[in-house]
Length: 148
Image (cartoon, rainbow, N blue to C red; front, side):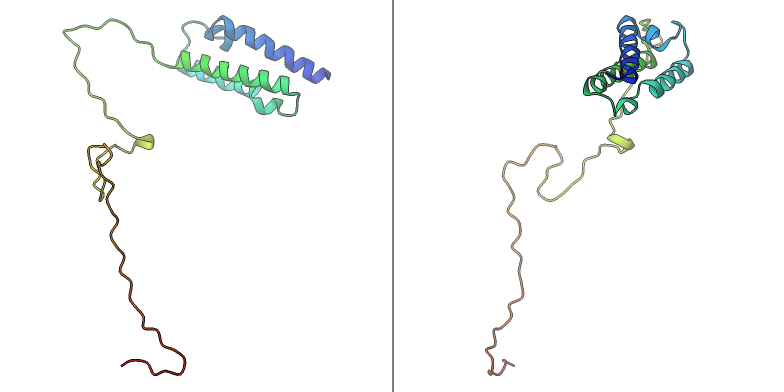
């Protein structure tokens, strides 16, 4: 193992240990860190621990870097998501409705297409496609006169 790989392995193992303790310790943040601080720390660490930086090293180092990066991303996600307060007040709580959308904000709306029901269930019978009518060309033998 080259000295560069030995240093990379030590760095990755140290980060793996930090990640096993808690997301705050892994990102080097206090418990009351803001969303901006969380994002900034995560972006800084991704520059150091992104698997592309270890792409020319041994497969063991590459595997370890992938594991560390996935754990780092999970730590970021755990801290970046808002935590529920758990204080639901029945007098001020209002029911909410959730609009279901497809990726990129395209709403899910029923569309009507021939043979596809709008209920989302598959049709009970497979519709027979329409028969295509083609123009019939008369066959003319060489030397014969074409019909009028």
